[in-house]
Length: 233
Image (cartoon, rainbow, N blue to C red; front, side, top):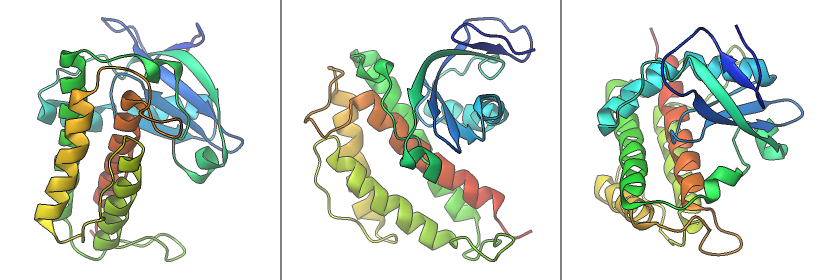
């Protein structure tokens, strides 16, 4: 059953508090993002489909949380509390969550900053594991589209170089095979998020730390799961 507060959505009765979600409403797509779980964000053609996809990916995200050492409630994907609706943009319709929620401006304690950093680090490990287990050539879409494995990795690395600027870091984009440079870039991003306490961006054009973490983690996991799903059978 699905019912509303701003909209509380429940698949069935589950213990514990519902998962807080922000919805980003584009003209063609809606993104549902779990505000307290960086990286757990999925889209659909409307609100209900976006929330259904978010729930469907709960078990996959639970693996990431377990790797991070962060307890993931068994009912986290069973009940959602939509606490905010955000107007979407061309970014939303293109296929990325691009709006900053009010909750993203909340400050971080040492514990919550460490938790955020652990989840992002686990997202990176997930991508590395999937890449190591996958062949270079991935299954193409029905029209022959889609990047192969190494091109996906290069895209993720390049995007992170741009994302890092949003939290005050200027990085040179590592080559996809340069393990040391990639690790150094990730370390810098993680260190900034782990040290964050205030909820505001470092500059007017920057991102609040909470939003930066969930946007970066979403991008990493979205492409890790894409690679998993497009492996040649």
